[in-house]
Image 1 (cartoon, rainbow, N blue to C red):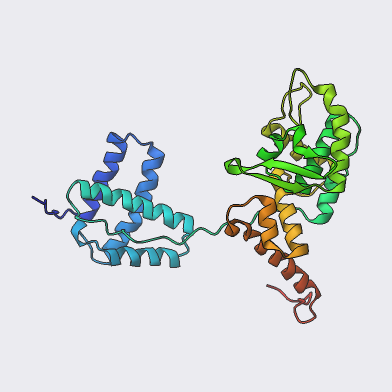
Image 2: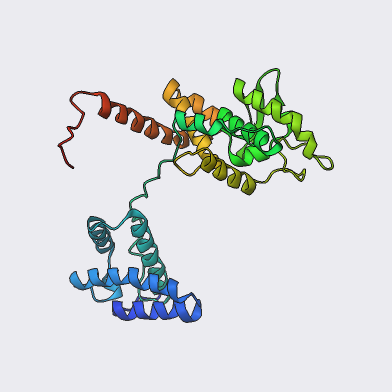
Length: 309
């Protein structure tokens, strides 16, 4: 026999839910406070809409409340968190038979805008690549910089490279990416030269048997964290005016190739993206570049010096 939902004052139901989180679920005070803050928004709306009981709260109320919060300037991520808090509360209320169904069912918060990746321009890349020195670390780091930018490698792909993956004669690199998928990439002239110089020194650091392309001074395969630290340091030494991290070279590779060729499918293949939608973010970067060129060059777009925002 179905149990009929019994009405419960909304504020009292929220208080009981918060006690449940703190006592039975043993959530931290910080987490409970976040739930309380989000559900306070729901209670404030319900009071204004004359919704006093759990059974009175309907889907259209939730939609209206979400729209109000959106118009008030609440960010998409905050709206998603608010809706998640409401759903947790409704699940609790249903388990207590204060509600017969979830009023938030089918409601979606606005999607969070995906941030555009940071890239280096061509001059900054050139500045980074002029790393001087002929000792072990400088030669190795120069080879890593050139190869990552030449091939658009992920950090995990680069540290996972073995010497046999590079075909010097054919100027090709075999890379194992996400999902153990393999792709073959062309390697540029400068990258080949840098790697060739590195391979002359690489054997000096080998201790034991290793096939790794890039090794530490102690002879083991170079780890991702070490590469991140080295690239950040190189960026400072080379005077690049933005913090440098390995993935920035992959983003720069994609942006520069797309800017020059306009071939989104080719960039997808080179990056090893399973879906074209992942690659399309670089079209926004390309548009930003074109917009800057337009703003600075078009006589009807240039802003006069005396104009203010």
